[in-house]
Length: 179
Image 1 (cartoon, rainbow, N blue to C red):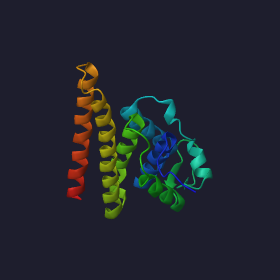
Image 2 (image 1 turned 180 degrees about the vertical axis):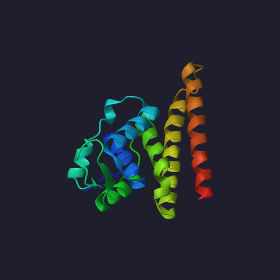
Image 3 (image 1 turned 90 degrees about the vertical axis):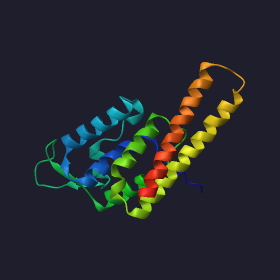
Image 4 (image 1 turned 90 degrees about the horizontal axis):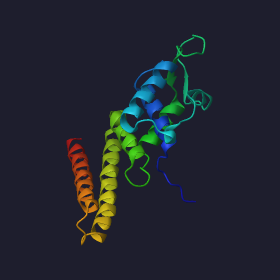
């Protein structure tokens, strides 16, 4: 059976939570605040990004209490071995569809936590992001070609979008070369 190994919007919240916990244990309140802060600064408020309750991560065995404090907002939590495995799975997953706001968030999260992967995984992620930009360029180029005989604001905007995506691809290429 074919399995699409690409992230859906709700998994962006999982990636954010597990990545933050992979960096350091923290309280529920701090984790929720840091997730909200990061996601809101990248995509703004979004119903697509309503992730599961952090309590569900505990039930799934992805995080656990790090201290004996009673379970509430101040209890410190940490990532478990299962959480680390899920984090790695999410970090190495592909992007879904064209470059929208959610994919920009996922890219930002991957860049935020890229140093938590081993070098080979880092390189593979950067190459995947370069390829994603290449597909985006092909898609935009096709649309631009379809409207090439028109002098409209659309063609000017498409030229701007193509330049932006190509610049992003070049940035990923330079990052890969530095690694």
